[in-house]
Length: 326
Image (cartoon, rainbow, N blue to C red; front, side):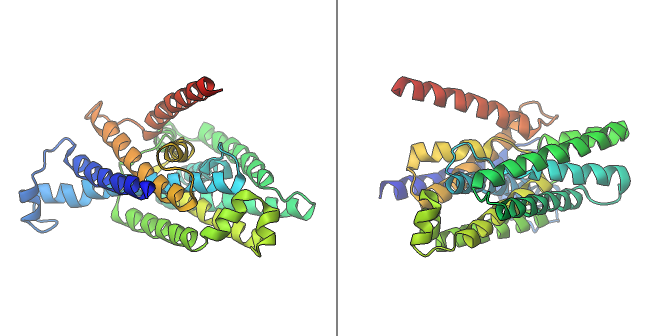
């Protein structure tokens, strides 16, 4: 009951964050002026419907997606340090974006990044399946495979960046540090659908997920198809991360930090952790993006810098708290 009340409070805080973030920006918007005109019939309405609203919604969805992916990976791996980017998704997306900028500049950056991310995911799953045939079936093997693919893709992307012209290299580097400056409705729709599907699957499979969290042997004894469910959940995590990276660039620490915060606030129940991570991740990234837009206006800070600063401070506080209890 207490966790439901806290989640309800989190939803109210999320709604408040969206309303405040919509008011922040170089142009002051007034609600009566916006809703008295149809989209596209005035400058304030155009700014609201085509720029600010999709950006705020994309920030919330990206934060929610990274929070859910982090919580899922930590549950499946039984490792509190598991992170969505351990699949090599960021490095694969960077490789796709870099290759596109060097060889196919007419191809949209999100499309190329998404293709590179999916390529990295496929490579990780193929290598992990090959390792499983030789008796290495643990989740740690999958994460280590993702780390190896990440280094491989990073090396190739660095080689291409070294040979690229300065304009293309600067554009890719800024995108890799995280940015929502090109937020659009198609990105919002795709990410919302992927996130909704993931949450529905997790809600329907909460019993299987709880069993997988304890141990593979317990899950098998309860009749859970371990390999099938693990593959499905990991694939959903990878696809969610790929969509976020393709449209928002590299935003680190959210999937690592938010589940820890949710456990402190709401507890560690499966559904509470997942939905709490979605709500807290959305709130966190909305405020981070608002700070990125306004702190050094009219310049814009990369999101990855701010999330890294917040993440490092959070983990220092977490370590000091644990050291006092030990």
